[in-house]
Every structure is written in C-alpha cells, then in structure tokens.
Image (tube, rainbow, N blue to C red; front, side):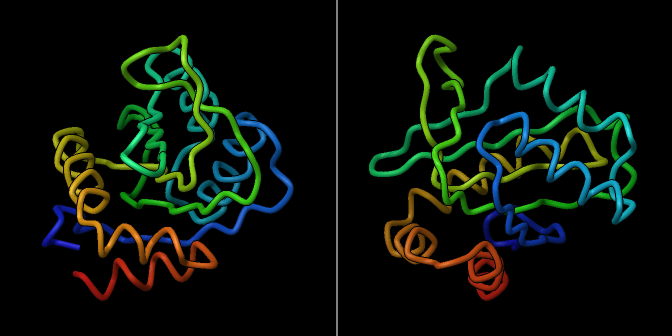
Length: 153
C-alpha cells in the first residue's frame, strides 16, 4: 500500500480463541514461524518489547495496536492484520498505566529497521481517513481488511 507507506506483503490472521495478549502473540508467532517469515526468537522478543514499549493507540473512535520487534528476529518482511473478536488488553503507547482493547492489531515483522517509522505513519494515516477507517472497522474479518488495504495500494 504505497499510498500509505505500507508497501509490504500483508496476511490476514484470523486468530480464534486468544483471550490474552500472550496467547495472541503465541498464535501469530506460530503462524509467522511456520510461514518462514520470522525466527523462533520472534515470540519472546515480541512479548518483551511490548512490555517495555507498549504499542496501543487510542484513535478518535477506535483503538489499534502495532506490536513489533527488532529486525534480528525477522527472516522476511510481512505485516499481519488481526481483527480481534474479544477484549485483549494492550497498554497505551504514551502511558503504560492506561489500558485499551484494540479493535485491530497490526503485527509488524519488518526486516528493514528504517521501515518501521514509515509503516507506523502509514497505519496512522489510514486511521485518520474517516472513510477508510470506517470501512476497516466495519470489515467482518482480517481477510476483508487486507483486501481493502490491497485496493488502496
């Protein structure tokens, strides 16, 4: 999605049954490890980084999370989009003491460390565009969100 600075491969991750951040990270890490996108160390690195540097963002009328980790845990760049069906707690990026329940989680597995900022900006732009944001929020699945993002590319 080059118009938003998101020129990476996306996958839709329909995570069923995850009731905590740890379970969510385990499910997505296993999926990305099986796909060869990340190394076995990815899951633990993702958990540790999220504890130290939370990625929850409270937008105007929704919330998102953008967990990621260092490039040494990545084999090939990919962004996983997860539409949550249950309340999973994330701490706010700007205040670890406050929690949110994101509607959507974008797990970044980027091999190029300089790309993180551009992708974060792209996701923020996406959620600042009310028309696109509303389409994403109304999507019934992560697969539908990925399809929408692909059409905006």
